[in-house]
Length: 296
Image 1 (cartoon, helix red, strand yellow):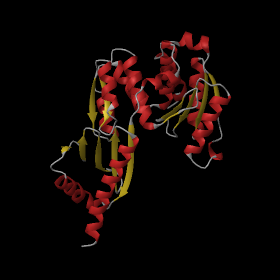
Image 2 (image 1 turned 180 degrees about the vertical axis):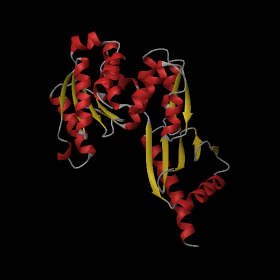
Image 3 (image 1 turned 45 degrees about the horizontal axis):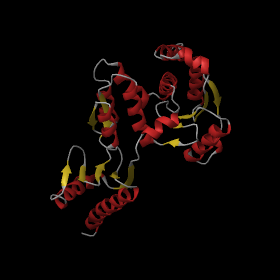
Image 4 (image 1 turned 135 degrees about the horizontal axis):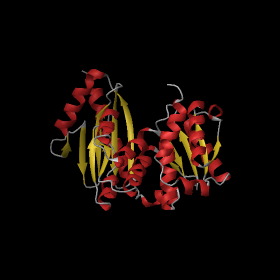
């Protein structure tokens, strides 16, 4: 499409509510992306909004994404940036770094996006995948909102977020699936509320999630799920997607991956130790079921 970048930037800027304040304060953004096209587009967009943008074109110099994010974190502190942003190659996902250099991982970002959506205004519905931490429900309740849990595939989450005509639902969609506009929306929100990123992050109570992958042949997935259900029929259980086993201290979700020959074991606990204990316990149970079949 001709002039796509220009239209994308102009339409994105039109949705901002605090442009004059952004341009007056000129927040310093440390920005990076593996894709040069995404980095250039993001830089132009944020610059047009009125931000000082420092681009980091050094992705290929680091061994992996974690090493690169750590580098960007150090640049935020060194250059006294207001916020660090690393945008994925397809422009969809966003990793944030606060002014203290703290990295907002994927799980924390999901909760942060929900918090921003709630603080932004009249949002009564928060959409979250079945794997999201319980803390989202607690935060929503504080804002007199409710949480709709969807299946974990992206289409289910997107469809629920875009169900209806409300701008607040569209904001959730942007924060989760348009990394470039999300960068602008987060800056716009922070400037409008006179907040920095660290104060938003500090509002989120601690939560403890663990995820583990276990290789599994496609043909074994049904048998594993069936045996987990039978072996835990005396426990509190949900079968919305995969098998979720709950107790007062946390939960474990044994979920076959829809795209790859693996099981995902998600666990959440009242402490990191308990979340890890649940992860080890249920991972071993899945592995034992798979091993038993090989031994037959």
